[in-house]
Length: 79
Image (tube, rainbow, N blue to C red; front, side, top):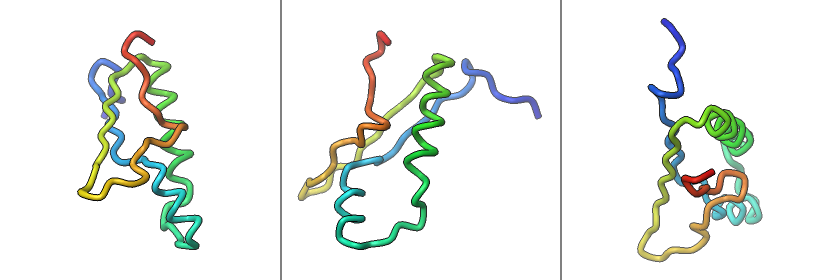
């Protein structure tokens, strides 16, 4: 199978929120401690290739901590 090109592929980032910091500060362990670094690396690669990136964010009925982590923050389309 051939690798997909930047014109055929989009990255969808879902719910990479600052609430993770609160979770960890409360002593809760995550099963994917390297996820943020890996997402940031993949995002950087997509941006370098000028491939489409879609950011999705869940906001519940009692929103708190739903701001996106700085490492994977959205950028304007002009960049």
